[in-house]
Length: 159
Image (spheres, rainbow, N blue to C red):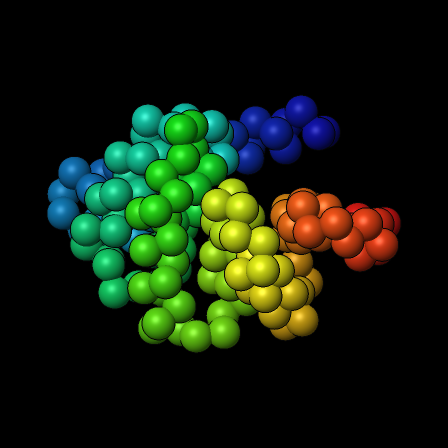
């Protein structure tokens, strides 16, 4: 039964992807389609396709903070990362939606990579206070505490 379910899921995913690609090809819902294609490419670790689609989504939906956030996250975690541009983008998203825990989390992760420990801790702790965070948030916070020599806090964060 599970095998068939897996095939069904695969078929649905393929159909969704074809629908999105067709939207892009015919000029319908382009920004959103690029966002979804880019996000799924990122999850599939296809960095080339992710970069292409997320940049296109950003071009047509640059006023949508979630699009800006996803592109910033991608830029921060790609190899090699583009941390300065990622930071500039996430600051833009936060200027539109201050206090959004998803965006604070993204910026905290970027600050962690920039080794700006105090800035990172401020953002990550605020994100944690609002939202049920991802494991990455805890790991980034632990890295910041570790860098500042706060071993007790580090241990409490990852326990």
